[in-house]
Image (cartoon, rainbow, N blue to C red; front, side):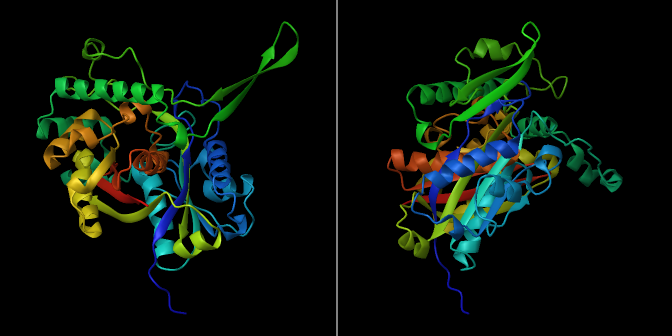
Length: 399
């Protein structure tokens, strides 16, 4: 059978609110349960779609072990009520896992291997620490100086980017404050409503006085991270946490977080068959490697590569979701590429909204496709740096 190259369209995109880790609203909520909620919500957005048409699910997770292990993608698909015929694969490219999941799902459609795919990401940093429960570095990493950067903590790599690209503490704090300000304003104006799946959190605890089990239920429909009280004076008082004389603080770094996102992708044939309304077309995706010790600069190389594949220029982008792993690397990328700051994270980024690692790419993809439609913009990009020295970028087109 001859397979034809075809377009891949996003026909549904949603995400959960992002909770703070480790003591936030989702501290006792499993990431696969968040993913199940996102998948169910995404399916409700396309009522005409026959669930049996969903051929496979690609889900990103940066720490796929313990509560996030055992191929979370397949388990979540089944728990969400999709038929047994829908497959599931969990992938890991650290912070770009969710975006990479979207790209893989799109590629399956574009080469004609599938007509309907599910893509997403999920992460609980409350339940799984950043390096997992049992980190074990290969000893050969430390035999050569050029490989030692693999073992660097992310904060230390941000310090090296800040030094090399001359991003001052003041520049980082200003960027961080603006992230919170933009996020708060977006929440107030309801900018996140279209992309959000509200989560009902049920907590059970013993009531010793009544000798009974008390149940408390609350609905979470906003990201927990944005702070209206953040200002330059507050940020300036925070001490560096990764280097004694450094400039990277908890205030100008992304928040550890919990969350999930899910998107449904379809071919043009499936769009017609099920009478679906495309939100966007997936245009291109690129990964580029950089030295591990300056991993934060990765988007500087991934962005031009994704643009070249798409035949587009930076000015063609109407909206850019640049993951704010650290203000140091975000500022360095923006300055080095000469990006239009008004187009970068107009509703705030990970410093305010949070960064649930493997889920972030899917979450920000949901943010982007809805933002393009609300603001009548044609092209947008999701991009981020990736641990061990990589950058990723994906381009979407409103249709």
